[in-house]
Amino acid sequence: MRSAGASARAKAAGEASVRSRDKSGKSLIPSPSKRSPRRSTAEARRQSILAAALTVFATHGFAAARLDDVAARAGVAKGTLYLYFRDKEALFEALVRSAVSPLLQHMSKLATSPEISPLQALEAFFALFAKEVLGTERKLLLRLIVAEGPRFPAIAEFYYREVVAHGLRIMRALAERAAREGAFSSDAAARFPQLIVAPLLVAVLWDGLFARIDPLDVDGLLRAHRQVLTGKPEKDAP
Image 1 (spheres, helix red, strand yellow):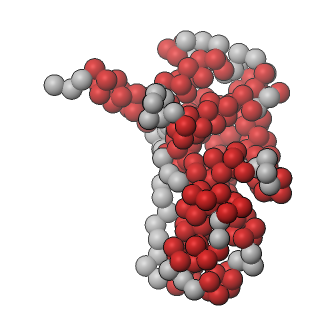
Image 2 (tube, rainbow, N blue to C red):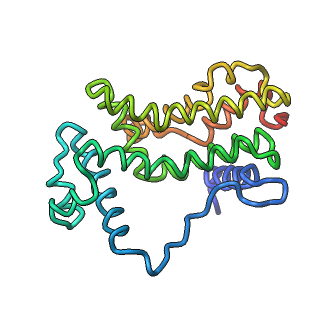
């Protein structure tokens, strides 16, 4: 027999699946793009270098990360690496753009789409973050920024400009629409869109620091957060 916990998780997964679809039943979470069998060797090598860079940066930190280690992990000569990236800073910036830009583009479409409600967009955003950040090595990049940003203001400023500013603009637009349509209980999240993403940051940090000691129920946290934003119990939320 299935345990109560397993049944609850299955039920939650089903509800998340429903909330992450628009009125026509179409999924709001982007499916992984199919790779062309004729993908160029140069692009494949570039992606291999970026994947290696993420591991090296996450393991050693920005300061201690060495391009020699990135090249070795990617299986290329150090000289080959310089054909793609002029220095460590350029490699880091390319890594951030390649990891985050597709997600920001999709979030923007969700926030402004007239075909889905603000709460549907919010649920899809939460599901997207859980799958594509918490569920992948992208979370390591976010932890790196938190850990290294104070020591290296340049990378913090870059991340703010390329990621945070765009994300806050998207969340503000979503919150303004939600407040206007009565989906949110107030305009607080429109004035401070950081409120929307706060539990997501908590989830990333908790996963890295305390998950082995006290695992966090991320789905439950986000359901509770939704209730806070709407001011209504889950069953009564629009």
